[in-house]
Image (cartoon, rainbow, N blue to C red; front, side, top):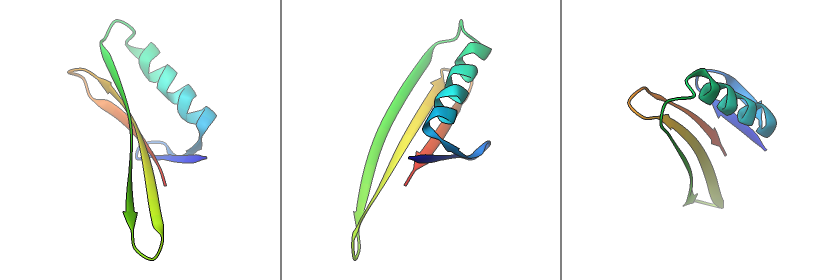
Length: 67
């Protein structure tokens, strides 16, 4: 399963998880919200997309998409 990050480019699941951990370790006293969501669209076939968002409340976020 490959994910894409606007700032880091293409990465596999393990690389994404490492990036998330490093992001949280960067400001460990901050408050975080992690959101995982998915959506689909039907044309000739069904296309799914999954997003992982790590929101550092009040200080930005990182997100990754897989499709």
